[in-house]
Image 1 (cartoon, rainbow, N blue to C red):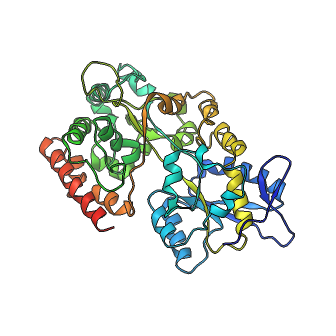
Image 2: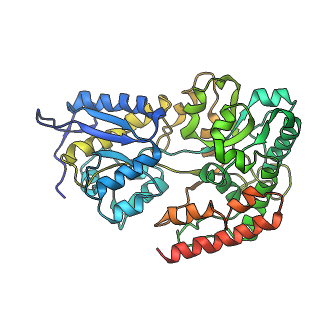
Image 3: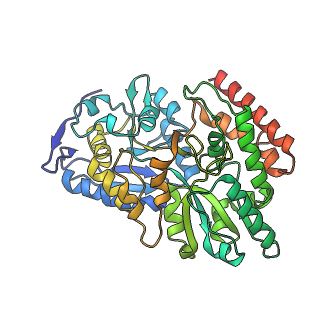
Length: 425
């Protein structure tokens, strides 16, 4: 791979040398909420480089279909987001531009300044294929109007999962005639949902070495038993599967959900956003002393990576744009604009102030007051992740949460599913 032909402007950010013949850069992402802010940042880079960067939004399912088609012989976008579900496949098959030579020549990028889990995710066999775009955390979202209507106290940052269960029970019982439920969660709500309770109780969906799981352990079963109890008073799976947790909440028929920081804009711009508020993700009172002790509150974090196609026409310009997105200036701006929290450590403080009238500090508090763990992944994450959502695994207790044995059996089955998937990788 040839080294970047880089020029440095007075602003201190690395940009490629522009020429009149240089084509526009096509950038693909999947989140409409992030597009305006990211385009603003890209436009700043364009002013310095003389190259236009067009950010195009493609919905999640079509994004991966089109990217796979491009990788199979079509045209991949120049620059795009990479995700933990698929990163290994793209990196191992040389479908992404290696960045090591560029990073070595770039004084503005030091990988030690970014969240380690995100950096490691996009490194394969010692080669870096993407730079960290962001990181995220999880919080509890609640509808104040529903809590007020049924006389239930609002959630606080000191709530445990027992408090969630208690409030969900009260709301569901009081709201029965109105079709209102205290809580909603789907099997697909893993990073933003049930994964966290597994860790709160002392187990791991995927072990730190990415070669095993403890989801069948007594600790995991204790956590998932608490989730089962919440499911008993939550919106039925038939309702959730048809509408989705976010839509149910926005429709005013669900009192609480857990959700990630990447979804703040969705709720901030919703019709009834004045009724919505956030609290820190609940903890597990494992020792039953009524307070959150070390290791009892965990928040999953993930991070997207900025990557470029291996076949891109102008790799220098594409890296230049990626470098700008990941520079300290742009990472701070990303947080200030409310796009998302930064992939660079220590520059997300303004994110909590980006949404006037809505306190989202629960997400940034998690960085200091909770334990963070990186989103569980292996070489072929989607194989076992999809299987966990089906019959024979956690779909069974989700559909029939009144049976404790069904949830315990699902944990055992999940253990076998993950172990087999890893063995076949």
